[in-house]
Length: 317
Image 1 (cartoon, rainbow, N blue to C red):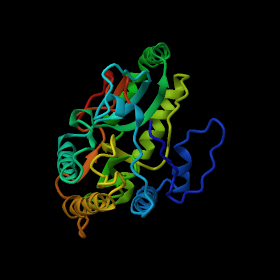
Image 2 (image 1 turned 180 degrees about the vertical axis):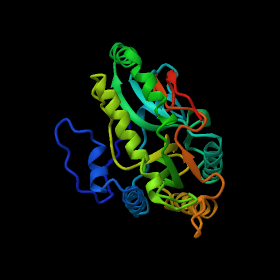
Image 3 (image 1 turned 60 degrees about the vertical axis):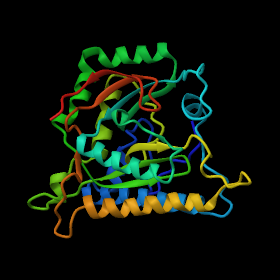
C-alpha cells in the first residue's frame, strides 16, 4: 500500500483511553453536537486538501505516490502472475444510484486531464464504515467471520442503518499524492423543514462508533487503520507516473497543475450543483442517507481495491 499520512487535521485535541471506543472522543469533544461534528469533518478535509496542494504544487514535487501492489494488479506494470495475499473484513456503506452518478461524472472529467489514473469501478464504490481487520491470513479472516456470524451479530450490524439513519451532504473531491476521493460531511439540519440540527443528532460518526461497539460485543477487536473524521469514496488512484513526465523524464509540473485545476473546477461545480442553498435547501442528488437502496455490506476477502465477496448485505430503504 502507498505510504500516506492519515493524521486528524480537524484541530481536535482528544485523548483515547485504553479500551475506549476510538470514535467516542470526537463526539465528546464536539459536545455531541451535529453542528460541531460537521465542522470537525469540514476542517479536516479542507486542511488536508490545502496541505496536499502545497506538496503537489511545490516546484520540488517528485511525483505521485504509487501503490506497488495495485501497480502489479493493474496498469502498465501489471504482473499477470501476481496475487494480492492480504485478506480483510469490513462493513461498507454502498452509495445509492444518484451518488454513483456524481462519481461517474467526476471520473469522466478527471480522465480528460489524467487518463493514466486507475479509476474505481462504479459497482465497487464503498465508504468504509468499519475496517474489522486488514492484511491478515485467509484462515484468520474466516475465523473472525464465523465469530461475527454467530448469534446474528453481523446481521444486526448490516441492518443497523435501517433504524439508525445518518445523512451525508456537501460532496467534495479530496485528494493527496496517491488518490482522489469524493468526500462528505455529516448533515446538521440542512434541508429539513424546521432546519433543526438536533434532528441530525445521529451522525455518520455515531454510526461508525456503534458499528465498532457491536463488533467489540462479539469479542472481536477491530484493527481499522484510521479513525479520522472522514466520510469518503475512493474514486481514483495513481498507478503510474506516465502522463506526468516531460521530455527529460522529469515531473511535468504543468500537467500536475492541470489536474489540480481540474479538481478545483469540479469542486466549484459540486458546490454550486449539490450543496445546500442559502435558504438551507439541499438540491436533488446532494444528500446521501447511509443505507439507501442497500444496508451495510459485510464483506470479506481481498478488499483493498473494492473486491472481495459479500458475506451478508443489510436491508436498504
